[in-house]
Image (cartoon, rainbow, N blue to C red; front, side, top):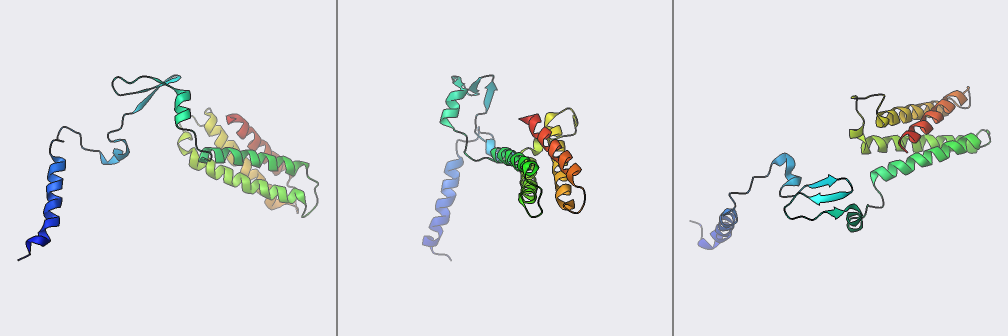
Length: 186
């Protein structure tokens, strides 16, 4: 038979469970799919004011919330945006650089394709929910994704074809599609 001293931790744990569950029958049980929102009061957006959904809650100006909770310095969305701008800068440099083999033109073209790939990848990750087939060609987010993806493919084809064959057409069409796609959401 076990010694009573060995049963003490188990008895204490059982007593704590019973005491902690007593008097809490009126609280709803957490839903496993919404575990993050259990016992949290949602915030409702009301134009330029934010108001808590709780009782006797005073509205708070959006600027006050920004001061209390500043936006992080680096987010996936800001990374996507600055990678896109860097892609356009490298693309402009590619166009302006002298067309010598193993020169700045080639290096900037490869850089713009690498930056464009990173831009499209971060955009797909950050804005996956914004892209849909409900309005395929009228939604600016869909057009942005379509044009920048097609632009990246044109730029990549131009880099892979150079310098042996004519690649300027693919590069020009790809660069134009990339620039128009960025301009749509800017």
